Amino acid sequence: MLPVFKLSNGPVPLLAFHGIGQDHRAFEPLAQQLEGRYAVYAFDLFFHGSQPAPVSDDVLTKQRFQEIIQAFLHQYQIDRFAVLGFSMGGRFALAVAEAFPKHTTELILLAPDGITLSPWYRIATNTGLGRQLFRYFLKHMPLFHRFGLFFLALGLINRSVLRFAESTLATPEQRESVYNAWVYFRKLQFNHRKLSEILNNHPVRVRFFAGHFDQVLPVSYIKPLSRRLHAYELIVLKTGHNRLLERVGKIL
Image (tube, rainbow, N blue to C red):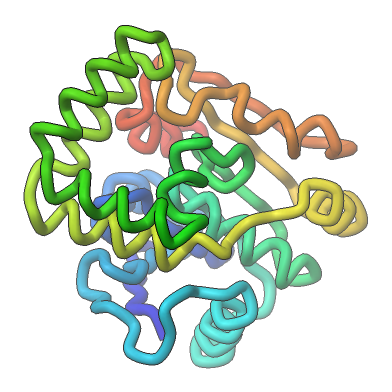
């Protein structure tokens, strides 16, 4: 089971999944703002925080993740709950809602990954050759930076994305964590039609939050799912990617 930390008390359990390079502590300010309304259960995902690498498999499947969440719900005797995912954590929030729609009251997605897959992510993780190249570039960061500037000049990426990538990959430990997480989580992908049917057929309140200045996971990335939903809420805040989490607590 994944390490989980209860950060606040309230009548509604809220399962919270953090972004790349973070751990459960990313939700501490949010939990303070939600005290009395939500009982925030923040997880440390694999290769992050207190959670070490898995020992039994080389990729996380939806079935395995469902078993992990089922064990958590059983241990804490939780039946109905809300789920929140920020950035990379959006994949996990989506997986929970897909697997437990009868038990999910709210799906709260903050600049979520997992709806629109970046072509760079596909290249880096979907094939053996891509993974070898990904690891090679992470071991040769000056070369990574030069390629980043080259793609920036071609207009294939923007400066915000390059800055985010370089800050996320600043140390050898960060680079190892990012590589392992990207590769291990690569099977958490979703069929938009199937997922939207599940959400449409259950009383799940779907709420999207996006940053107006976010170039890492912009608001347009939610459209492949949102356009298929019968009902959802979208709030776009005047902030970038990294500041979105702290802004949302006041609204919730």
